[in-house]
Every structure is written in structure tokens, then in C-alpha cells.
Length: 383
Image (tube, rainbow, N blue to C red; front, top):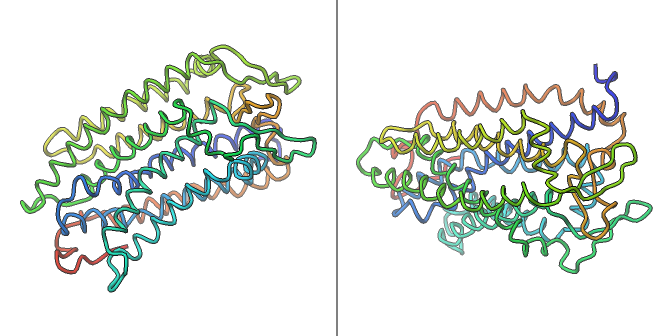
């Protein structure tokens, strides 16, 4: 089947696959969002244990998806992997460090005799949920802004800024998208906890009210940053590619033109934003528990539409501000036709993996997490 695909079709297929994985990761950041809400919605040990145990059932999915996203990029678009991870490595090290803190915190927060104490590990979880997601948003925003690198004749990366990637955090365009992702993750985290925890006992009713308030306040806070990002995206010059020669050039309103040239992607973006708002509206009802599924689907659609806008329609998805023609496209950054073909056959197993995840997710969440599964005295961690 895939043997009949042209190289260009395989490159487009793999950008789509990578985009889907990236979009799923954005949804799964509800774990990080929930972590960052811990001190705001949980006021005692019982409430904290409920939040930690609820998120502890899913935290590995977020980290695994991030690793899968990086692995898919490495296999399908190795030149991007070498350029970004090899040049802007300080920002990637900072991101990975926050995820190491997350893993350590879930493991040791309530271990007997730990020297740092539970509060230190709760701070680590907060850092992963805020700084980690902020930096990921900054990196993803460079798909539309730019990075300061040059490739030599042998495709070796020459990063042209001494901060080696951290300089991207000084662009408000990049930071605005990062803040939007943080606040979106917090919104999704509150919605997930509302869905996953049993609030029938009066003992935790106040936490339920705080979670419903967190949904509204974080989503309202996210909107200005999203509007700023989308306005700039629609008005700035973009990095276009001449398909016949591969030459990179600046084009006015490129990303808006991409959306208009791909009406399905534009509809996906609009639908995603509506679903996010619908999920928040569901949470306003006293009995509303299913908002995470609406907003979760919405976050996937929004992220997927942005990934496709960055890579399709003859666009450089990793542009260089130092040397325009060092910018990366899905065509000049991809693996060989043989590698992409072989990987495409392997990717046929992905639906089975997703079905496996969905099956066990359903089994884990068949019954809501209740106060009977945690104790105010033992604060037993469940993974």
C-alpha cells in the first residue's frame, strides 16, 4: 500500500501523524494543569491526596506521549530533531528536567522518611505544570516565529545565539502561546478532576466548588493570550517555500492564507475553540462532570490545526531568522522514502495501541475516585 506513495505523500502523511501525536500531548497536559492547581483547590491532606491519586493514574501517559512525539520527529524528520535538540538544547534540557522532577515527585512525595518533605515535591509538581508547559509552548511557537540557526553544507547545526535556545523565551509572541498552553492545561486539569473524583461526600464539596471556579478563571485568563497569538499569526509575514526550487521566502499573511487554503483546517480550529468553551460551560452546571471530553476534544482540534498550518501548504515549519534558506520544511528535513515507507507500515499498529489505552483508561475510571481510597492519615499513593 505505502509502496505506491510518492516521497512527498509520505512526508505529508508523517507530518500528519506527528501532528496528531503532538495534539494528543496537548490534551494530556491536563495532568500538568491539575498539578499546578494543587495548592489552589486542595486545602488539606485529604483533598491533596485525592488530587494526587487522581492525576497519579495518568501522569505516565503525558510523559510517554511527549517521548513518542520526540521519537516520531526523530524518525520522520531527523534534520529537525538534530537542529532543535542539537542547537537549542538548553531549553530542551530545562523541559526534560521539569519532567524528571514530576516523576520523582509522584514516586517520593509520601515515602516514609523522605528528607525533603511533601511540600517540596508539591512545589516540583507545580514547576512541571507551569514552567514545563510554558517552555513547551515557547518551543512550539517557534514553528511560526523563528529560531537563530544556520546549517552548513553538511547539514551540521550552527546555533547563532549564545543562549542556545533560551533566547526564544524573550519573544512575547512565543511566551503568549506558552502562557495560553499553561492556562489551557489548568482548565483541562480542573475539568478532569471534576470528572474523576467522587464529590458526593460533603467533606469535599468545597473542593468541587473551587475546581468549577478554576475552570472559569483559567479559561478567561487564557483568552487574551490566545487572541494576541492568533492576531499576530494572521498578520505577520510567514516563511513560504517555492515548491519547484525549495527556496524559502517571506510572504505577507502566510499563515492566514494557509488557513484559507485549507478550509478543513480552519473549520477544525473554529470547532476546537467552540468545544473548549462548551466544556467550560458544562462545568458551570452544578452536576456537570463531562466537560473534560468536550474541552479535551477541542484542545486536540486546536493543536492539530496549528501543527497542520505550520507544516502544510508549502510552509517552513522550523524557520531560521539567521539564514532564511536554512529553514526546515517537511520536504528537506525528512527521512528517506524507504524509511518513511517502513515506518508507515509500523504505524498501522497505532490504532491498536490507542484502543489498548482507551480500554484500560475506561477500566481505571469505571468508578470515581472516592475518599475511601485515600486516607487523611495515611495519604496512600495510587498509581
